[in-house]
Image (cartoon, rainbow, N blue to C red):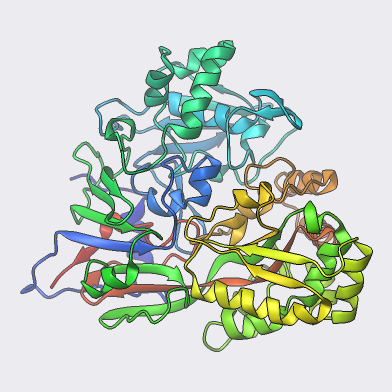
Length: 572
């Protein structure tokens, strides 16, 4: 069996003895290996397509990272790691920024179709924002992409249909520093399946010619064709990783089995069952169906984790209130007023603190930024604007709502439930804001999605980065930044600010530290002034591995702790 240079197995060997290694790393030869491992994670499994809005908020990167591989994946510390099993990517000289991608010659989907540069062309086209149609706000993208960050800067993808090679050329004078976030795990979809569904010979020729009817059919399938529900046609869900989908049930979980056509190191355990939010977690843990747990701290009330080795760690996601920019929060004065009654310090002390808070870094106090990580050198000098909202100010909050034209407002806060910690947060906010004349309504539900904010059915969403209910965040922060860009798929509050958009473009293009600090400071000043959201604290994660599980390494990021599930071994 050939080695996997640069991929999951080597990274695991480097960090398995680190502070985030929770599971057992040595087994007893007399024990037998368990053939199936249950993995519970607080996502609503809705779509296979991690690049779509539905897939992003449904936690696809935390579920399908070892099913749909990419050129890079998010490691346990939030860093982008090259996956050379999928292929290689390198910057090459050129008049414009140019990246050369080469898919592994042995790469083949589980249905027998080779991986090809067609997959990159589809990803670029879907996420570039260049294919549009008339909508109620002017021209709108026909692909429902979670974000266009980076992809919209690409001028072209040179690809011969079916080839293993692609050359990505960015627009002149446009540089994208975090290019390793592109064409990543969980987001590189099988183009041949979309082509078949759209009844076209291949996606490359169709997207090059721009045939409106054919492109629309491709978009329709890309948007909804990979929806995951009880009636799953597995032929539409081929795998390019060590696991493939076998079946799905809302109550019995998503069943992943070893992909027989996988060309890298074979999965250590032949079957992984992923249990999302819809599963009865208490009963699954009680009957030993779950061996790996990755959930928000205290989100499941009275959950017994006897038999688990568990750690609570500050995550890379930002727990926050995402606000609407219409209705009760249609004025910036009302949004600022609400921020002045939200008890950020008390929320951190009671719900966000993980053990003894460090003096600095992740989890050191209330979060003062939506986009800058607490352990960044830029964090402290860039976030001075948050000082105004360090403590509650009921008089100013009351005045803010009055001047915003909504005295004594009702604020509906939605979240994906059941979630005991978030329910407690809403109750604390209700109590704190009551003296300002604010009536806070708990609008959490088991079928909640952040699209209800866009639809006007709630006024705020309580969630982590980009309205994600579960695993979220990364070192690059691209999702956090792009979620507030005008017309981003993840911008559910419909915030729009041209200067903010320009700042994010500059941040992605210039790595000079002085420029970065100045831009980040300007961005934070702008966001604390416009108040599209209210950051609370870094989302605390409870990550547990049952006793006897080997190679479990906590991943408090958007990839979750299943980032290396193909290395898991459970012995009893």
